[in-house]
Length: 192
Length: 187
Image (cartoon, rainbow over all chains, first blue to last red; front, side, top):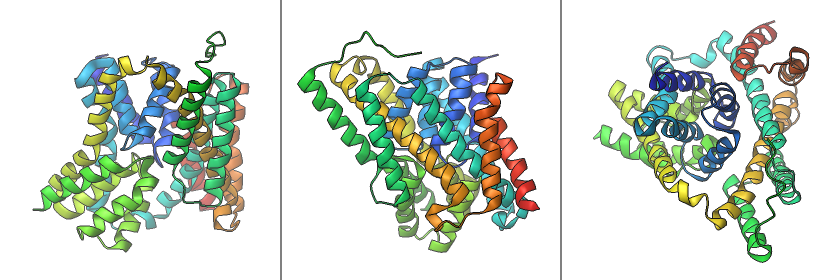
């Protein structure tokens, strides 16, 4: 299949089945772009996630632009991004035209209650996949556990503390350790 | 000029919304209310609709607000404006990335950022799953149906692969969850 058409259809499919924000779509992108199409590696996927989290805008758009550009240059980036946007644009536009009481439709409300539960599980699955493929070293594991506990506490107690601040702290700690101790030995390497 | 206002307003949202849609909601609220596009009540309803429809929440909201203010052209302009900043920023980052990723300080930063984000995503997943099932954010307003559905879906996602030797795709899980939702919450 033509790469542009393939990019468009793949991302349109991801766009159509992504509910509830960016983290859930990591699982979908990992499944289609890394495992099935092998357009990017898991390591690259991890880099996109880091970049997407550190730059403004919807994570889905960041990911689509990244994969599209990598596979087929500027035009690929435009097409993959359009692929993500077109399905949600069409759905929302139709709803805003024809359905004033969208959320009151019992069938849709019940389907969405189910989807909401799936979204949590998909995010958990994305997290577990990342942990499995993480470097088996002390420092990354320690940072992971600390940010896990911190984020869980932020969620449970509804603290007003953004993920950006959490990421800044991790960056500062990692840089400080690098400046004091130098780069870690590479022999362990990333486990595939 | 409503078209220009929509473009500039949602450009601001796209440019300053860090950390996903939920972090961006206060910013979106600020923009939408300051232009007087919607009442607070209508905005809350639109946020709920954007969460229940596929696609990035920010894009959905932009389409919805644009369409309500200036029809199809308004929807296109608002959607483009919210997408444009991240599109351009990622292109710039990728062009700079080749050399940047080899930089030893950049690598040190990534060594800290990656596990931190993994922890954040894992915690978000654990929290959402538990909260959907037992609702501790709503004073443990738990619901037997939600607990049952959580157990079913978690089994499909995490236990079934051991039997089938094949992972259930995320899209499949979404479809199963929608059908189960209609059945379980409908009876």
